Length: 307
Image 1 (cartoon, one colour):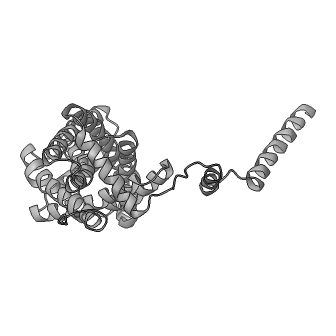
Image 2 (cartoon, one colour):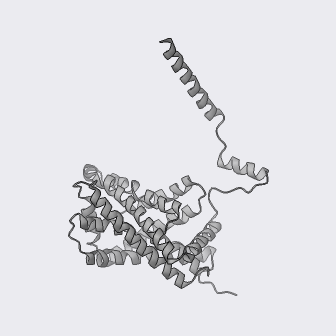
Image 3 (cartoon, rainbow, N blue to C red):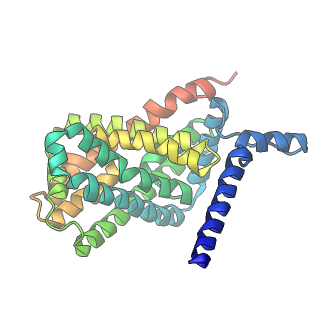
């Protein structure tokens, strides 16, 4: 008993010391580290780039993506299709499996659906340097508008990333179906059926609004130097677009095929004509014009004649 008491006394003393050290002598903040770097002659790195530099960084990122080979973009597109698919998979597993909450408090269910799933899919894509078509509609477009890439580069990047995203999404949809983890939950079929029942113009507008938020997440995350900063920049816009019921072409590339595998009365023609085509067009407009054009005309050279 004496040994046990001594053990716990020592444990408490150690924990108390650690707590006191953390409170009284906390680790240096990012600002403090930057100040130390400046005092020592080093270059301080800001947590978030200022607006003009943020735009310049986005253009540089777009130029780098545009310069990639077909093979590289396609392969990284497959990876990103899987990442976004995993996000949609989790959203259906968690937020899509709350029928009681959906009935009693539909707003809360939408928040759950948005918070758990797609944000982590986009974080995986951004941190690992993937090629996501929806984000590329903003970044590569900016690079072309600034003369850092050609229209041929833009076509190459969009086609290769879209094709890769589609292949990756199909792969994960099949694996998710074979895994049996969704059980008899009806969410996948219900969500996909609703998405393929929209009028063309409604799906188009939802695509615009969705990629407006997605590309804002990509744009803001590109200006963050820390993983926490990138996660914060991604989480709010992405969870918002899911909660709002908007349409993301790459996420739909996973959800609709998964629903078809699970018995949804949706044909391949329905998937493209009633959803992917209008949503993809809307995503392009949202990313290129609603996100990048305002910043390009403010901080860049969009539509400006050279003197």
